[in-house]
Image (cartoon, rainbow, N blue to C red):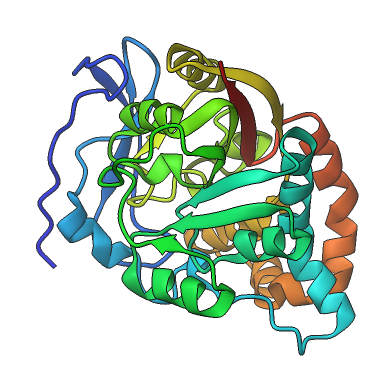
Length: 310
């Protein structure tokens, strides 16, 4: 594969001055290339620079990509169903506290797991947006929910249409995230809410795992926002930050962190842990309390911000 990454200025302030933060390969999929994150010297935004354009980057989202897993299988045992639903249930419960009804667009809905959980609640008029044709068709067929098969950049004529817009682990993948937040603000009705989750540069595991941290996920993650900067950008786009939480995904992130660390520095213990992954219930029980405490301190891998349109 011949890679031709291109240099890009900072999406937030336009500065071309930067400091290299780290260089590394694709740890998740093991595909070719060496990539790097840099920090803008003017505003502090982290960006992948240089980076691939979408016609090449699309190859780094294979069919078995992590967010393309199937919907909940109702033939699973009750315990397994609860385990699979738990993180999505926490997300939907949080949204219900702010907007118990209305129109809801899930941007980058993937295989529809969050939409499926919201559908169980029977409260909202649901829509999805997903650029991968196979995933968009799958969600629409399985859930009967309208899914726009396009990118957020090309999604037009929907100003002030939605009461809720969710972006679960999406912002860091977008080529122009600041412009995307401005567009999302236009798409929300006055008083509508945006809920977005993104890797937290303030997380404890970023310091622990360093260049093995899942939050970098080169080359798919294009931008990472310091939390104060992200809240500043939201405010500038007419979105008033209301709350921040570490809601879901901490255990999955820990397992990926350990998997990446094991690939860089193999050990018998890490081989054993990562071989069992989510199926080893004692390990999940053992890590539950520490991860819960870290999440309560808002130091988990991902941070979820909730903002209301003024």
